Image 1 (cartoon, rainbow, N blue to C red):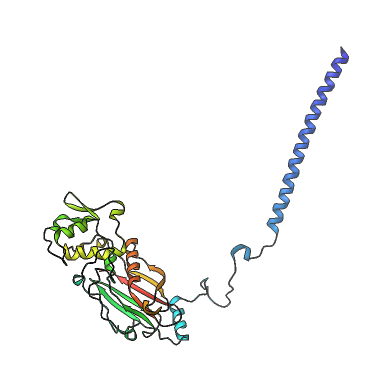
Image 2 (image 1 turned 90 degrees about the vertical axis):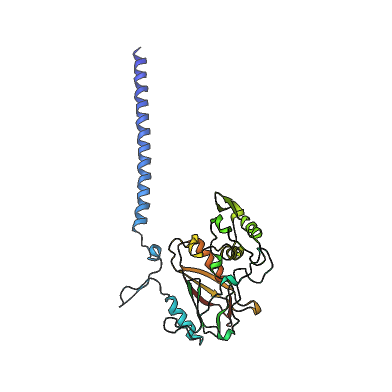
Length: 318
């Protein structure tokens, strides 16, 4: 009996020692891992780092006050240097009076062209602007559209670059109204061989009568693309006597929009194409910005040089 008790105590002590040894081994392994991790962390903390790893290249400025981080010159100065090196006179719009004021003819003289018809220019265009020799088109162009005004400037002499013609209103690409009063149809007369029924059918393609008003249709039926807008603006203004001063897009104050672009070298009778549009100062109405951009691209330009030249337009709303 005493032998059994002695053996039982021995086994109990042995199991307790085993547990202690296991715990000591685990703690030792944990301490070792912590020590190794700490060594790597301290080595990374104390190692020498290049400045380039922290903040990229460093500009050293000796004997000068704090300078701007960019070393590129301002755009107008860069354009002036480029033009001077090429022997091109840079126009000074603020000091020289305009040599020619370009105006867009009144839309009432326009004959509407139905969307999809094969026409050289839109229905809103009216009589084409007088043809002008490209040598006489100034490097700065000023114009007015129903009270709105614009100034175009080009990076080059008037004999090298400019606008060759403007056959359409920029205004004719503005957003069309969401609502038209049904009373507008009370005094419709014949308009360019279109009777009241024809005009009403054209309007009802995109507007539907609802409680005394014509409301723009939902979905694709109410969507009128830029190419078709001059036609419907012509109907509204000339057939329905729509008041442009009360247009929905004019009800909030609109800031002048300023756009930069590049004029590519002329390509035969097609003239020069515009590219690289950049809105410098938006009107804060995206629909108006898009309309001005589209209308700007519809004008005709020329560039007799062998490289793209920069242009700019500032369009101010009444």
